[in-house]
Length: 425
Image (cartoon, rainbow, N blue to C red; front, side):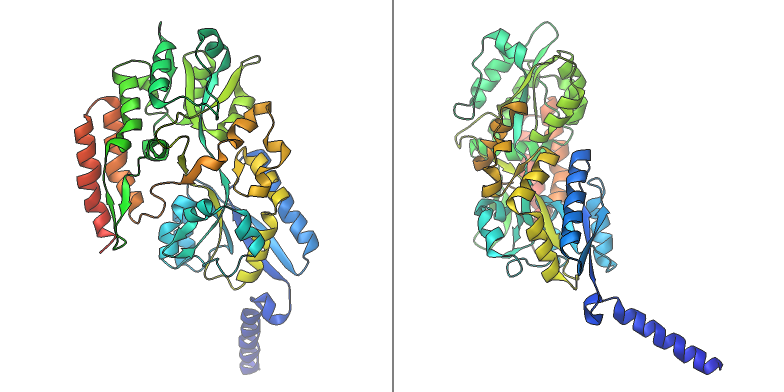
């Protein structure tokens, strides 16, 4: 009896193990979709779309899993190494390089339908392309803009910039100085995380910083174009006194009370901050969105879009790709964009009238979509270490006035290339 019981138990366990792959037993497939949506509207939009998919696809059920932007990199690394990664992964393109090169993510080139591949522009696909493979679908993007106190600007008589006729970086510096005085500042730069903001805005001036050679290796070079944005911030803080030094260590949200209180005329922020402003601004506060300043390359700026990827270990890649295609149909992409107060990457979604309204200045942001390009560091292996150990402290010290431009250049280039070299042996 004991022997028969043990044999029965072992057979039961074997059958249970086989049935974990639902498709093998003819049962329902279950896909796990880890979303990083956090704003109430965005979470609701994602969950509604999952519900709609499940209603229409009884044989392929998607389970919504809530993730967090604060811990996603380490959490994914642990789940990849433990063989427990979700099938469909929401992340940002600047977090994908090491996962893509490391073999944790599926190459999507043969999995995605032509409709989706042709709807998203090539310059957006470049943000998720590493070593020839495509490891994420870029679907939401966010330009950096100037959020301005509209009453203050109108009262000053300065020229109000538009996407068709933006300020130059020189003009921006002059106007910030004009708007300052009596304990108030023309601009607040929230640069607690200074690197991505600096590099992405520097594309407008032609700055690249990272240069890939014929051998495929990347080196750092800091030229005149790379210095335009850092010098503007440095001079506004330390020479013109048109930017508050107190905000250099702040995140974007930290500057909003001072902005609402009339301490700063303008704050450079991501486009999605409009939601916080709508929710938190005092009644009657008049604000508007202005394009970021333009340089030699116009309004061009770098972005790291939000992405959807498929785990390489997923046994249901085909079904996962079909869910991504559903999630990113033009009308669904618009729903996700409105929920996150961001811009879709899809050309059809960008035509939606809801993204061209003057209310909450959607039209201003949408006019910038064509100028968004892959962030300079997108495919650079070793970038996280370079950013944390070299670039962040160097930019922070430069912006505060503790070091000069030559010292900044030396640290970014000399020390930075030593870090990158270790990843490219």
